[in-house]
Amino acid sequence: MNTLSKRIQSLAESETLAMTRRSRELAAKGHDIVNLSIGQPDFFTPAFIKEAAKKAINNNITHYPPVAGFKELRESIAGKLKRDNNLDYDPSQIVVSTGAKQSIANTVMSLIDPGDDVIVPVPYWVSYREIIRLAGGNTVFINTSIENDFKVTPDELEASITDKTKLIIFSSPCNPTGSVYSREELKQLAALFEKYPGLYIISDEIYELINFNSHHESIARFEAIKDRVIVVNGVSKGFAMTGWRLGYLAANPEIAKATEKFQGQITSGASSISQMAAKAALDAIPENVKEKDEMLQAFIKRRDLLIDGLNQIEGIKTNVPAGAFYIFPDVSALFHKTYKEEPIENSNQLSDFLLNEGHVATVPGTAFGDPNCIRISYATSEKQLKEALNRIAQALGKLE
Image 1 (spheres, rainbow, N blue to C red):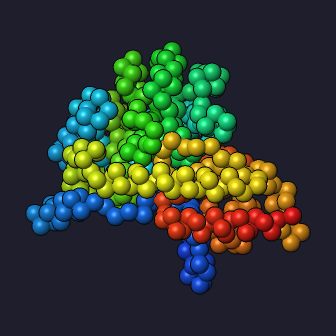
Image 2: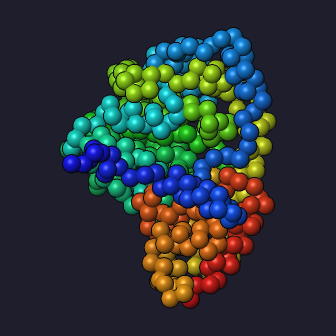
Image 3: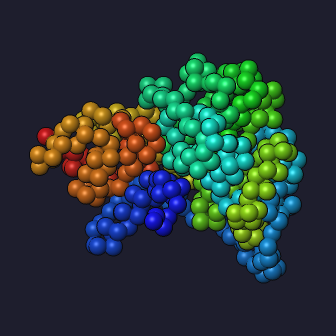
């Protein structure tokens, strides 16, 4: 008799978290590991946000919050969406969760029945696939290419839409590629979605504030489809608040209420302290937060440093991501090379080789649906990145 359910046995471990765990295990054994696997800014939460949390504690805001979040926080989120994105939402259409990941899961669980199709452009964030699987949905993958900055086109999307298609999930700026959809590109996608009134869209915008070339654009801006868009965002990336676990979604009233109902049976409300901290973050005008600007400028320098270094290593092909803090290079030219007569045939084996031989942690592209690439995070110091580049070059130089 099996003790564990088939559901949990079939559920894959998050590959990004798995690589981080393996890196920590090697470090605990005394190895000096440069960890480029984790999507976590190496900056501290701005002081004014921490002060808001301390004030909440001192004011005894320490009891159960409403499932959907404190009204004043939902009002601040609605205000932020209007101020920064020109999106009109009533606070009742906002649901606060313990991170954007839970907001995505709440939505998928509220919309998808077994047998429904969910379109996911490749590369995708690792948890999309498993969340859809938990809901009983069928994931329909659409491959993209590094030559097109890993963006999906309307024609590619339309070729995958059937009468079973219920949902599409995509992110911009994107994890793992850093790709950013322009307003014109989103306009074209919105025109396509307008033709299919039964199709819903999860727009994952958690990297909104880490955008290097332009102002962030949301597909919810297009009124004809706005009622079918679920905007997912949070404070983890843009305000260096990963540990505060605070995300949110904005949706039409029916979907918002459904996700609140689901969350009420899973986690209830997000931490009261985190909510007050998030309110301070979201009330601030982004352009006036000097820590945010300093972080953005640091990421641009790191991106350029990493791209320049990788482009000098034979067998690695890069593009220039416009947001987030990842590079997703094509490393397929290195496949079928050998180390000590052992072949490296895929990105899993290459990431393992870089970890074990070079002591640099990356994430294989198979985790994101693209076996030709690896994901490299530059959410760490320039010193660490330079060391990582040296180690990668030395390790790959041993391949034959």
